[in-house]
Each structure stands twice: as structure tokens, then as C-alpha cells.
Length: 353
Figure 1 (cartoon, rainbow, N blue to C red):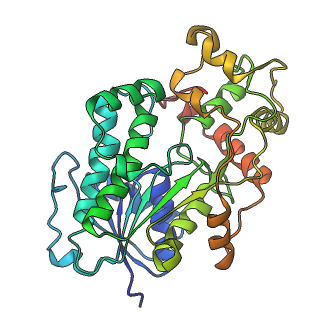
Figure 2 (figure 1 turned 60 degrees about the vertical axis):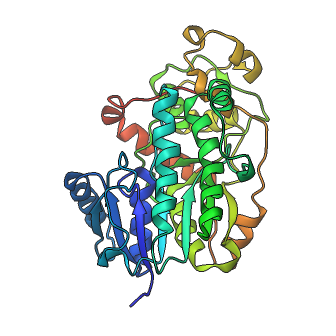
């Protein structure tokens, strides 16, 4: 029997459910922190359909409450050794207040809760490849900086930048050992492509499938990296048991991801759908009106030529026998799943890139 006991916030989301499944496969006791009994039942049904090795326990959580509506001194939490925070809002069009509440306040509350767990050995926080590596010494932000950054980056990305710094600062001040994981665009499962994510890169792929992508965004150096959800779950399940991951940040993405126009052309060819011949450089795309481009302004900062410090994450993964699946195969399987799920996807809130 494993001595590990994981408490997972955000367990019912796209990443959270795969993380719970992976932890169960590794023999870890899992408690899912969920908002309602119905959401837990949906998670339990999903786990049963995906051959999870056992089942998770659950506790109801209330993010609007400073104490999360749960008592860290309760018997059910005395054996918790690791807390995974994958909760938050990945959405465009939020107000600054909504984004701050969903991605900053909630994350800080999770850290404070974790600090009161007697058996805790690691907090794992999900951040992002474009926002990771913030300076915790700059916390707290004043209102003018928050307003400026949220306007410049968009409410979603601005709140994730602030959250990254706040989590590190709060964990250090409270003596909580932590690991920050900065994933790229999370695509579907590497085996069958299954995904619930309809925002960001998925929206661009859906526009391509629907024939609504007017041009290929970016140039041959535009890099929007991906990572499969099962690889990410395996990496997150790994870091709590590695001492070298303590108080460290890791960028988890596949460096072999094709440049964005090539990625979209490859998927279009695979699906036998028309691919636009015109490419619009990201600089021009950012200056054109959204009504003309069909692009949500908040997504445009992701059209970048930057590369990311993946060496530490790759070395850690390799040491434990974890390797990225072939990226082009994973992308094609993901695209196939999106096509098959198109009727359901059409009802989601999506934001084009």
C-alpha cells in the first residue's frame, strides 16, 4: 500500500481527471476536491470508463471561502502528503476581477490550506509555459501594476502571471515545499486523442476543420508548443517523489512541435480539409481589427517565436523513463478526436487564435 495520499484541486477538469487516473494507477490514495456531488459522480464515471485502478475519495470545496470550506485539521486530511492544484479558469473574455478571483485568490488559498497539513511533503502547482518563472520578491502587486499587466496581456494571462508569483511567494513565506509545472498547450491523450479543451490552439484547429480559418497565423518560426495530457499527468505525478523538484519550476512541452503554420497544414492534410495559403505575420495580426481576423485579442500573445527552458524537465523525465510520445502522431489523433466530437464541440465556448 502506498504511503502517498494526494489531494487534487481541479480534479474534474481536463488535466485534473487524467492526473487523478495516473495517481490511482501508481497506487496513490487520491482525494478529489470538487465543487459538487454531481461533478464528483461525473469524475467517478469517467475514471470507471478509463480503466482507473481504483477509485478516488472526495471532499466538497468552496473557493469563495477563504478557508475553502474545509478543515485542514480533519482526520481525512491528516495523511495527505501532496497537494496538486490544477484548479482555475482557462477562459478568454473574463473581467480583471473574475480572472483575479479564479486564478490568483484561489491559488493562494490552496497554498495556505496546504501549509496546515501535518504530513505534507509537496505542493504541485500548475502554471503555464508563457507565464512561469515570475519573481516572487515582487509580490504583492499594487493595483496600478495589476491593471497595467491585465490590460497588456489580457485578464487570463495577466492573472496567471500574477498567480505564478503569488504561489511561490506564499509557499516560501509559509515554508511549503513546492513544485511549479509550466505546461504548453495541452492536447489530447496520446493514445486516442481524447480532449475536453476547446480554447486556444484547439479553437484554431476547429476553425480549420470548419473552413473558418481565413489565414495561417504567424510565420515559420512561430512556436505554439504542445504536450499530451497523459504525459503531463505522468510528469505531475512524478515530481512529488523527487527531491530535485522541490522548490523548482519545470517547463513541460515538446520541443519537436512543428511551427504553427506547419502544424495547421499537417492537420489539414491529415483531415483532408482546405488549408489557407495565406500567412499573416503575428505582428500584423495583432494590429488588425478582431472583426477582420476572427482572432480573440487575448490569444495573440501566444503567437511567439520564443523557446523555453525545457532541459531540467526533460532530464527529470528521462531519469524516470518518461518520454514524449511522437508529436505528429499525437496531433493527428487529437485532431481526429476533435472531428468526432464536433457536434459537442460546437456548443462550447471557444476562442480563436
